[in-house]
Structure formats: structure tokens, C-alpha cells
Length: 113
Image (tube, rainbow, N blue to C red; front, top):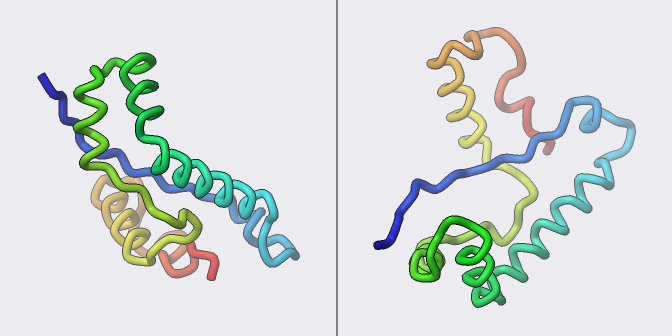
């Protein structure tokens, strides 16, 4: 029997101290995104290895892993975020009572241009 799960989305954030440094960008962030992109490229080219890992190291069968691979896609470039994503996240956090309206940073200022 194939198990289907909801997709989990992740965002990588950097503290304002890193983003407000005198450098235009912190080299560690560039290196991080470069390595993640390389990992995604490798994963996309080696689905056989992914199936083997998922079916032997995680709690999924080989059939589940193969079915999952038919439905999953990863961004080809991980650096950057769409303003709409940040706005939606802030809206959800406000509805949940985590953030208060008109307090703190605006979504536009949360993104390094």
C-alpha cells in the first residue's frame, strides 16, 4: 500500500545581523545555496540512489519511494524568495496570534534585494 503525505515546505532565513553587515552578502549564505543547488541537481540525476536510501533508511517501501518521486519537484535555484510567500507567511502568523498587525518589520523589508 502506498502512503501519501502532504508536502513540507521549508524556507532558509538569515539573521538581520548577517544581512546588515558591511559586505553586500555573507559568503556563507552564497556557499549554502550553491551546495543545496548542487544537492538537488545530484538528487535529480540519481533517483535510483534516492529510492534505495528512502526504502532502506526511512520508513517507506521501495514502491512508496518510486511513487513519491513521480510527484516531487525541487526548485532549480534555492536562493531568493518571492515577496508573496513572505506576505502569506506573515498573514498566517498574524491570524495565529504570533505576530501583531503594525508591529515589527514589514514583509518588504524582510527580503534582501
